[in-house]
Image (cartoon, rainbow, N blue to C red):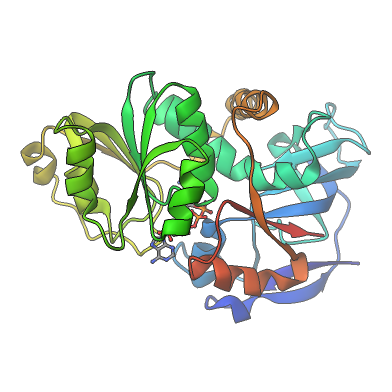
Length: 324
Ligand SMILES: NC(=O)c1ccc[n+]([C@@H]2O[C@H](COP(=O)([O-])OP(=O)(O)OC[C@H]3O[C@@H](n4cnc5c(N)ncnc54)[C@H](OP(=O)(O)O)[C@@H]3O)[C@@H](O)[C@H]2O)c1
């Protein structure tokens, strides 16, 4: 017997129940792993709250790190005792142990500890595809990033700076502005009191930006379009403030032949070879010291409901990890 958080109905943090779970043996292509650390992500809130209509009952969480205990038939590249991590698994990371498709697992380099891995896999792989694939950030670009002091935000700011970009980052408080500045963001805008469109115009001397990375959604998205130079790319990759209204595509013409995409890590990381290449780039940039993974909150896994409430209330910065 092992334990995991499961939920039988969508709702607030209180729907998460710590339950006894019986794990069978790993099936073909699967591994059984024992977690040492699990990552908290905003998508866990959407899934718990019913935004994506997850079939119930369900486990929760897609990011974790630990040790392989047993592998199923056909798994040849992993063995018991291997240190592994993952950032795009089927739901079920909020667990002491779990079964998982082995092709989601990445072997961890010795220099990356389990806590750091659980803090960076989902978020760092996301940053990899956002700035290296969706829109390839180049040296000399000035880019706009919302929620720059969040989990994804602190990684994206540092990595984009490392690529030679100037990052303009929005945040809700002065403390978060300070943190974003210490992690790659060159110009911060406190969007709870400043007009970020006006500030982006001012900072770029009217040139605007070629790309905006918007995970806030409802409160920011239409204004994000006004920050884009002609042919700019609006990357809507989340909706922490709520889903956006249906978009009139005519607006994209009016605002300068803009592009909009709504990407997910599940698409970019679906194929094993792509996932492995993305993970190698992430490991390299972390090992080099160019990107530091900031674990600013840790909770025992059993306190996941409290951690959900803190993330939703914008109380967290950087990454949050559950210790198992
Ligand atoms: N599509 C993908 O592949 C993918 C993958 C990973 C993450 N994401 C998305 O990326 C975003 C960041 O994820 P994360 O886990 O790193 O979370 P996070 O950025 O650490 O937390 C969310 C942040 O959003 C900001 N925010 C603005 N309005 C908010 C509101 N009404 N309620 C709550 N937060 C609000 C807050 O920063 P301020 O207080 O500074 O405003 C908050 O700290 C999320 O939207 C997530 O869904 C998408």
